[in-house]
Image (cartoon, rainbow, N blue to C red; front, side, top):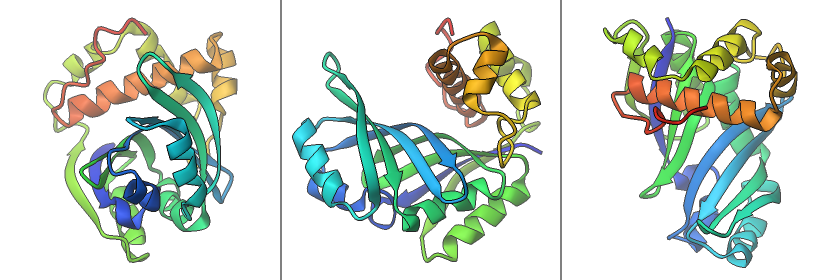
Length: 227
């Protein structure tokens, strides 16, 4: 039975550890995480409350980051958008999620803790992933866990999605986008739906956030968004 879990782990033992030590006021929000092949883990990350030179200097010296590149700068909101590539140590922790069928729905940092929202096809996958992470001497806490079917108002959850979001997430599931390894790429799925790669990525992100928020009894703040 599909399981959504919210997990936390210290920034000291995970990605960007030294960057947070150098920039304690830094705010981080992960837009998405992509597993590229068996070893590469590539997150797309928003940085805020920081200058570009300061964050790039910190990332450059951070042993958890192998490569980085800036994709966008939102001068109005003061946010910087980067593509990162983690080193093997962090990548191996992320692969514990992927190899047990997990999908990263959302990730952010608050008060020195990474909070991850993960989706697994069943509770056994979640349990196996957590055990594999702990075998790497990483302390991880399961804050909340919900199985689909425990929520008596699943119709309300579905209604919270717009029609394009429902179509996108249903087709992504049917085509194997959430399988490990994936049966279809985001680009191929976008072509199937006749929309742009960027539009589909945003549509899936919003849909996943709504579903995770509803399952964890937290309003996702996305319900009024047309896509």
